[in-house]
Length: 198
Image (cartoon, rainbow, N blue to C red; front, side):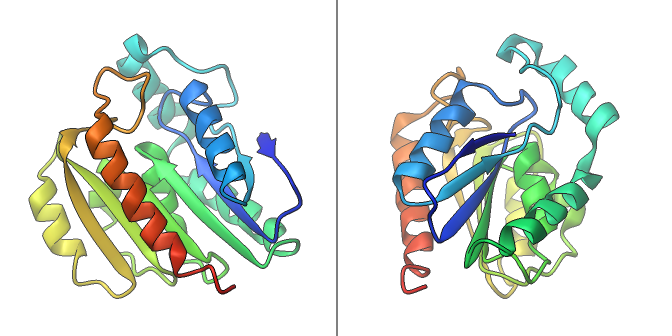
C-alpha cells in the first residue's frame, strides 16, 4: 500500500482503476496530501500496474483475481484508520469507484467520491450511510442516463454526469478531457467543503 502521511486529522483511501497503482494514482495521492489529508492507496491487484493498452487483460485480471467483494478489505482498512483519524473518506476511480460505492453503506465512512464507476449499476439497491458524490462520464459502456435516474433520488447522494468519456480525469489516458476534469475538481471541492468544520 502506498501512503502519503503528514499526520493530519482526516484521511482519504484512494482506490485505483483496473490498471492499478500507476502514475495517475500517485498524482492523486499527492493532490489529496496537499489538500490536507493523509492518504492511503491500497494496491488491489497486488502487482505492478497494467499499461493502458492492456485494458482487456487488466479488466479480466480484476474480475477474476480481485472482484468487487474486495470492498470487505477496504472496510477493514476503514475500521483501522478510524482509530487514528476523526474522518476517513473513500475516493475511487472506475472499478475503484464501484468498490467505494459498496463501502458507502458503512457508518464509519465520512464520505465517498466515486468517479465513473460503471458497475455501480449492479449495486443500485445500496443505501449510503454517508454523503456520497457520484461522477459519471456521459459516454460510457452502459446506459448512464438510466443509472443516474435510479440513483438521483437516494438520500445523501449527489450525482452528476460530464460531457466526456470513461477515464477522462486521467491525463495519461487518451480519453483525458482537461475542461471536464476542471469541472469535476470544482464539484469535488464543493462536496468536501461541507466537512471543513470537522
